[in-house]
Length: 389
Image 1 (cartoon, rainbow, N blue to C red):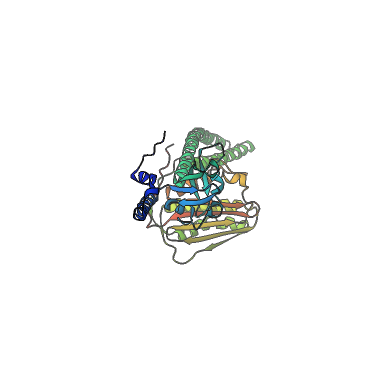
Image 2 (image 1 turned 120 degrees about the vertical axis):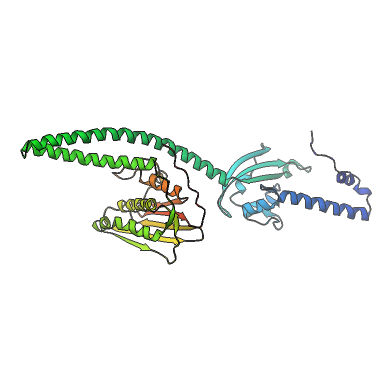
């Protein structure tokens, strides 16, 4: 049953053959007003609306569709959709046996977006082969990003909760071992400088060294799963970069790694926790250093625009294979022979707490570039609350 209601205009059109020139002119003006009203209504919609002819020509696009796809709302002539929106055109093909479909599609022009598409066929009185297609487009980019962030946050929450328990369970026996080592060393001291005493003291020293190393791993775990909230204050990022580089300067010289820092004039301050920002930069620089066996270069470049101050750390190391690049922020995942695999997780949590972002680009055999972006001091910083372990 049709839901369309008969309008006065329909009744007039039913007897159009009986109208004189004056009434035809009135009818034309009424048609124009109704067309203008319909276009005004469609242009108020946030969703994009496209009408396509049977051969793929764009017959109509409302203002939202033109904005989403980057073409004029009134395409000249019979503009082919494949020319106006090549990313979208394949998704607007409707199978012969389908009257409608819904899907999500990614477009790259005029900017990367994720669009939810509903496509339907509109019958034509002249035959099904001339049927039009109507597409309704919704921008769900923000929704997709929020969903991915939520899933990622939940995944990290579950991992770090487990890590907190493991770190706690490991810490207790380490303390007990340390206490018994003290007792063992006291007994060895009573034996004087005999060979047996020296052997006991040497073994105890090895054990204490290993305890210290394990204790450092536990501290890293706890730092990752229970990060302190940042104490935000005006922070000179140029000075913090210099301090982070200085911490690794001796190690760089020993390995023959050259480091350069490019600082443009007028780098504005950020709103950050100085110690946490230094920790983030240290982690990136240390990873860059460890990616090079002997020799190489690390280039640190600062830049800024109206919203962000960025620090890019580029190395000439071994690079990261594509299949591993997506896992660098996973807890306990590492591409190195040693290490706890929490440095990048700590980095990610610090950047999120500062409302910043991390980008990683890498080419195996050529090196890796890590870019940290911090919001300017005068931008509103939205810190993300650390998950509770």
